[in-house]
Image (cartoon, rainbow, N blue to C red; front, side, top):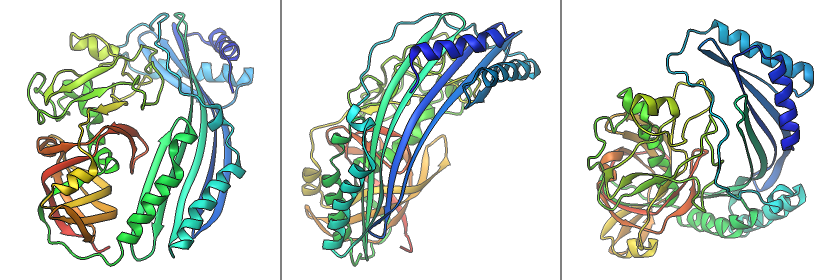
Length: 443
């Protein structure tokens, strides 16, 4: 793993080789290990280590980036030269700003020695218990258990230095027979995964999903477990970006200061939340701010990279990405405020509805109304008169996310959730009225 001394040594080699006006170097080093299982056996065990050195050159109002995974002096010099050459080929960028100088960062602790030192034997022992549960219930188990350790640093010729260390443990399992059940977790500390609890939940759903019945499409009260909420609201990431609003690509275009969701919806971007992950600085090294974007349904704030803030007469919020890029910025640490309703209470007070474990194959149909289509998966159940009655066949939905977040009836406590996509968020379970299912799927 890289150290600060080694990072500065790499930067010095690059800077001496660079003829650019300004130079920036992003370094990333990591170790990733994964145990994959299917058909109740471990069939893959892999480990990988890699280092990335990404050089950005700024020359005569132009910028470009070159990368390498070699850290010998000659390779670093070649990367510096390629970045400068590429920059000189680019058109001048009128929005390009000088590199920022030294910054002060709020500390976050996201590294666990327990996770970093997780062995193949320990992963296999955990998977063994998951498989034993499957065999005891006449089910087939498939999934992964992985651990990663990552170091990132950003250094520039204006004196900025930022670094971040993080570990991540992830577990997901699907149990199959005539039904299916799924669960997934992702945390800094492997002990926080709760592998046996996740496996028990997925196993229970798989057993309960056998012999599903068909439910006619229509509008139903729907109870979305956290993974399903994440899979939907993740499509809002770029809509909170100043660039997207400025370009009129956002569903929030011309809506700043106006009511966009129900009064029970408050959304922040907060890298410092105890259930969040990630570095406390953005792609330019600007400190990330905690930003409340929606407060009681009203769109209060957007997030801004430096160049977007200048265009929109705002202050940078530390949400830019590595430059150059076509996206501008994004809030990557979404936190939804929760409520005090439990999943059991939501079920108990539902007259007729659908309980959804997770969603998949989601696509955006209308970006301005945030109309999404997708399907339920791995545990979809019919609720009637306050109880889960039986499993139902999976359903396709066509649902406006803006409409959905205006029809939330109840919220549970916010939890760290992992869904179909690779990102994670802090979201609650939600009960939503008039969720639109359009057809029964084949499976």
